[in-house]
Amino acid sequence: MNRRPRQSVRIATIAAACLAGIAAMAGCEPSAEDVRRQAVSVMNRGVKLAKQQKYQEAVGQLEEALRLDPALAEAHYHLGSVHEALGEATKAVEEYTEAIRIKPDYADAFNERANVYYALGDLDRAIADFTAVVSLEPDAADALYNRGCVHLQRGNVDMAITDLGEVIRLSPDDADAYRARASAHQLKGDAPSAQADLARAEELQAAPQSSGGNLP
Image 1 (spheres, rainbow, N blue to C red):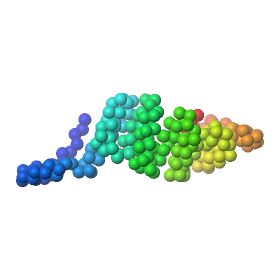
Image 2: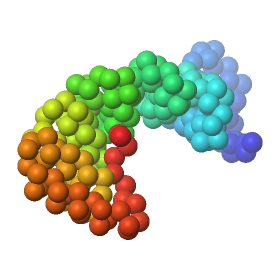
Image 3: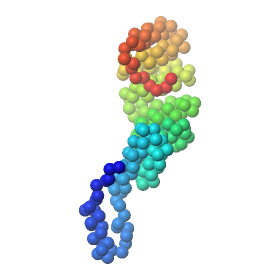
Image 4: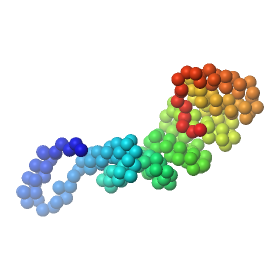
């Protein structure tokens, strides 16, 4: 474990003040900046443990980071990700929600919460969160793809076609988007458009796999 550099000047200043007879020890409290720096350091250890799939240890580090700084939105986000990996959907939603409360433009937190809602079958909330991602990042092709797929499941065929068409505009080689849009065209009764999209998807299939969204 690497040691953090000692704050020698700060410590010396505090020691001098205390030796000078300042009775109020409040002045010896670390600054908010120091606390945030320490919390981020602990959070980063938790993220590293999570990447190693040491999830329980990661939870401990991330909770410690939040004990130090409850307003650290990124720590809530990463803790949500760990709970999600552990299959603890309710806790994951709680942490993503807190991250969003602290940082309302946190697109990644909206996206991950949408994925959890989708897994729980709460399609309305999933759509709402994917919509928030797209509002924050209009070129977020994965969120558009995922929202389009959820619209398709809900029977919102025209909305699905619109979203998937936008994905194709942003990522013209996305075979998954063509395939999903073909399904939407088929449901709408537009067989020629469905066949055209399927043909294009097959053409792209031999090429390196494009990255569509993360919903089935």
